[in-house]
Length: 240
Image (cartoon, rainbow, N blue to C red; front, side, top):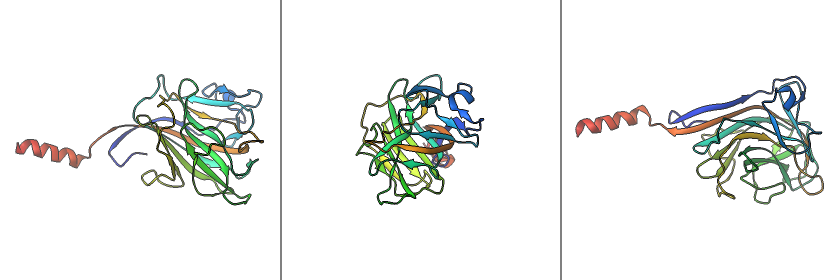
């Protein structure tokens, strides 16, 4: 996640979902907690190292990233998405399934799943939006993705600027695959990372069977000059 040796990174979460099969909030011992939705439809762990998300009015959960909200630097969340056994109920619309969360209902860096731009059951898309809800027209999408293969995803939220970026199967040192560079809402201090089971079959991209695993959250803070930069600064002082 860092830009070479320039940045100071702190790993806040490394979640492999290596629990027994069952409700995530239960099998994780309460490290994941519900915040909305219907608890009768909990986020499930499949027993093979992945959380399984469904659509509809189902439970949404989050895991705290620290004792206090994060308000400076950039947060990166990387994870693997497997949609090989998933379904989308609507075409041309979308629903979000992962995001950063403040202490209340402020959601940022929402990652969306949507239907492909062509009618093909083996294709889907991923997108990013700061604050849009399901079916939001302002979602910035990646290209069409192969549903039969897993995909490596990274989402970044700049805590100072309130902007979000998304990389799909690409290093974060390169250009973002998709980004929402204009803050659509007030900048939010982030308290947790959240998994969301959402969508509505009648109006948005209701999804089922989307698997998320290997979730890592990193906080990038102070920019540190390279050793050569320090050497030049010292040399300048000596000359003076």
